[in-house]
Image (cartoon, rainbow, N blue to C red; front, side, top):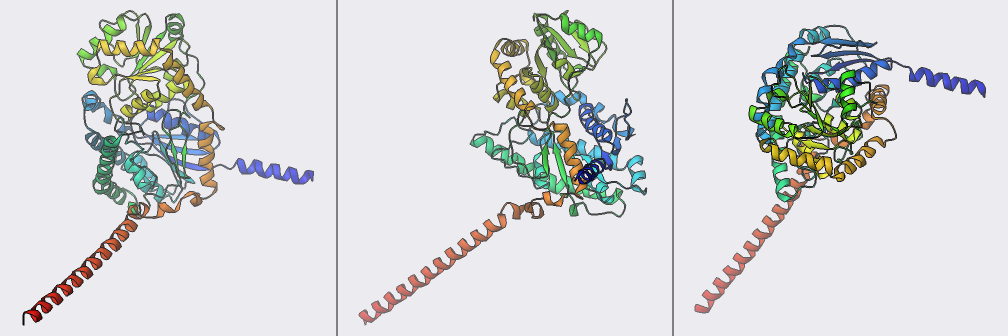
Length: 515
């Protein structure tokens, strides 16, 4: 009996210690998203798995088993775009979608044709799994297909409508808002109509214009020129950086796992000067950051003056992420830093509000640390995130065109002095933290799970093997309509024949009477 227990323990030990070899592909030059992806890949490596990580960034702190391969050609792409981000705020969702399609294609093309990826494709390397940062980069699925390894997708936000469509994930526009509109799932009729229009338009553009370009990238740059359409929705698993504490509940298929907030750690020690600034701010601190893509230095002069006037009259101190060196006319209660350890700062008890662009990572960190938000959304999913935060009662929105001293002061007054906002975000914080397993541990479990089970094909629901019109019963609806039309056609023609027959009988009868 004891020998059996010992054998079982040893079997479990060796089973759990099995190590795998992964290829990780990350194509964008967005620092915040890189930090998110890097966190996941580092943890995989720390579990003893070997990870080859191809990315535009160089890793500053080496991690055992993590081989970082930087692709430098991708690093400067956003530099020429940042100046126009504020102007881009007023674009309609279709214009924004086209812009995102364009830059995503650019990132993907640069990565797949890079010397680093091409050298790897021509090598004899073998991988147990390929992890791809998922965002409009379908050509990278060709790399995974080349290595004949299970594909694990990782999304930094809820799935975009075209991606949900392509991956056969349910995404009803009746209650799942497009990430480029400022709606929540509780839409009125006109919002549902517009949401359906935007989803349909983006999916059509994606299928007929965007996806064929990625198909050509695969044929051009992947040995053997495989057809992307043959394996485009064959991912074994998708990890989604979302959670009901900061996002709305949506239907998920078995191979889609939410891991939202996994990047948030217990607060680390802050730099001494920053710690002192926070500790000495007895009236509280307001954190101000526009994220890593949109930079504060690109605020137009008139908007900057409105910010200065607002901050100068506050009794609270302001900690501002400012990427430049020169800052003329800085109010005395404002401290600027080029990079802020945001989550660690939000954890400080003196931080009372967060002026944010509404990026999902920032929103999740606010929820986790229970700091109410004043949102100034600019691009991508930011408007939707802030609108949802407003509906949950822990944020006030200040649309960028309306950013003035009066509007910002009024918004700050609400979140600082109305306890409702802090109480509401505390409730959301409890929801985020109340989980049976830590989200990072959950991610690692499912990654290993699909490798152990050779891609876990049993997690694929049957609808993933249907075409889009079969999955949405359009063929059935078409058949039913055809049957109804046919019956109506037959009945109408029978009635016509009967009516003609009666008419002829009447004519004959009338002629007989006249004779």
